[in-house]
Length: 203
Image (tube, rainbow, N blue to C red; front, side, top):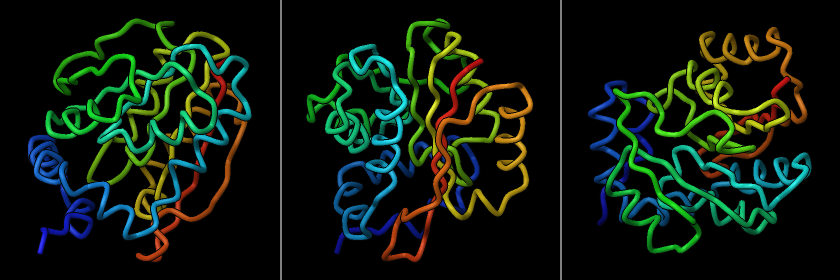
């Protein structure tokens, strides 16, 4: 029987340990996620497409993993998707999907390797959470968008119970960015987990 990783991921806090977990998980990730009915990527992709002015503008799928979310973004109408992830194993799987124009290997100890305005839309789907990306990632990604750009991200039930992540959402609102979508719904239904999806437009 293949190792199961979903019961491990939310308790992982160290960046190196998280990267290793995702490397080890990369070959079985899609199967395990599908077994649990993963809904968040499709929900957020639809919300992004609804509020995006031009689906042909390049979109960055931050924390792209195996490419599962990019497939949903393509289904929603986005035509030019770049992916970025710190896990070499996940990127190897993503490359096989042919969903991406470019794939970027992230070094989390370094600044993001792209400039403000390179992307008019950025998603972080299932990325900003306990055991994964910190709440500060909301600010970091928003800073890389031009005025009018869209940031779409999700917070699962674990993150929604953490004041640090709720404070991150409040910072975006307090900075004057426009909340275009906020919807609570299914995340991993077979585990009884839900998520809030958000789409913010940069002021």
